[in-house]
Length: 329
Image (cartoon, rainbow, N blue to C red):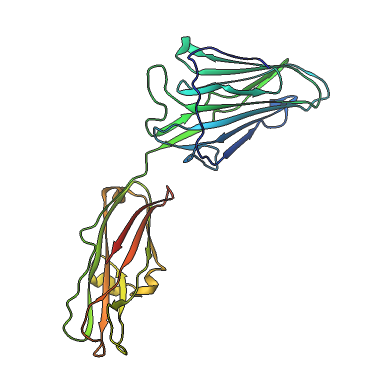
């Protein structure tokens, strides 16, 4: 198969550690697709690119994204179909890597339209396709810069990856709609922690409560909070036979009254809890979250220093990546 290309010289590019995500489209059966069955398969080979149920791709803002494209056409009629050709135009900021083109039949011509400043057209001229036979073409595309130097997907919004795959044969043609691409802003999380240590000074038995932690959380994405390693306060160097711990509980609430009306979890049970902060304008501006601590000191607890620590983990729910570990002592 011959391969031809016109326009700027291509540069070799690599595909880094990627999970394949696949979108498989097929022209509907019947008169609209005539004697040919066509599939248009596109796989993302770049991390961080996801596909929605409606077939649209979510891509990271301003980052290079690569796809593997596979076109397959099958003659399902009882006679040879003549002059079969497939073509598609990829937007000006999309680079078609001509060195990855591999077809089982025909010739491929890659052309930069608009005097070298427009979309890139991929034209696959198969020719005659015998009864029951198939042909396929594979190549890779990636985001790049248009002739004006503008990086594609540099701003959040909705785009079309291509103009529409079109298949033609002697006596008819059929086309796809464009493949939609949505660009979301980069996920971010900001956490302000006024203090990470809570000290008690207790002089006599009883129950005591105080604010243990205050966080101000801001994010443009949903956030999930998890807890690890929380336990009762434990005496550093207990004497033989002395109670080694102080019973400890935790509750969340903006005020102590709110916390008192909520559930007080024993320290170990706090590790089983999680809090979710839904994506909202309020969260993006910043919300405050408070954790209260309650301890019980009995006459049997000897004087001394008791301590415990725990870890709070905040996760960007839409990104699936751990953002912050903060040990609280």
